[in-house]
Length: 129
Ligand code: TR5
Image 1 (cartoon, protein in one colour):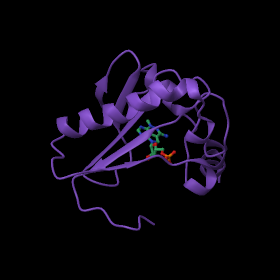
Image 2 (image 1 turned 135 degrees about the vertical axis):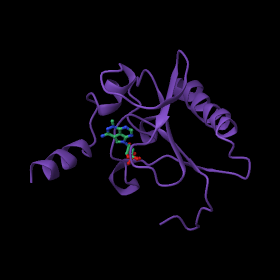
Image 3 (image 1 turned 45 degrees about the vertical axis):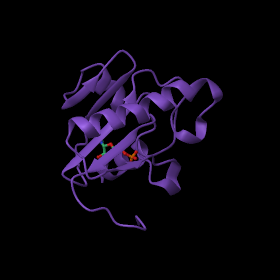
C-alpha cells in the first residue's frame, strides 16, 4: 500500500525535486553513459529493450515536461536530441533506434524532469501502444 501511494505521488505532475536530482547529484547511483556540463545520460532502471537510456538536462529550469517548454529551452532541447544521436552511435545502434518523450498523465510520464528515452537493440513496434 505504501509503495502504491509513493508511486502515485511520484507520478503527480509537480515542479519539485525528483529522483533525477539525486541521480544528477550522485546521491543515488546510476549507470552513466554520457555526461557533459549540460546533459546527463544513464541507463533506465527498468529497461524496455536491450538498450534503454535516459537523457536529461542537468538543470531543469522549469522544464518538467515537454509541454512546459518555452523558447529559452530550444537550445537544451536540441542538445538532448543531439546527445541521443551520439549515444546511439556509442551504443552501436547502427540499424536504428527509437526516441520517446512521455508528457503528462496521458503520455505516461512518471518523472517530472524532462527526459528523452533512447531505446534500441531490438525491432520496435508501430503503433507503440
Ligand atoms: O515514465 P517516464 O517517461 O516519466 O520515464 C521515467 C523513467 O525513469 C522510467 O522508464 C523509469 O524506469 C526510469 N527510472 C525511474 C527510477 C530510475 C529510473 N531510471 C534509472 N534509475 C532510477 N532510479 C534510481 N530510481 C527511479 N525511481
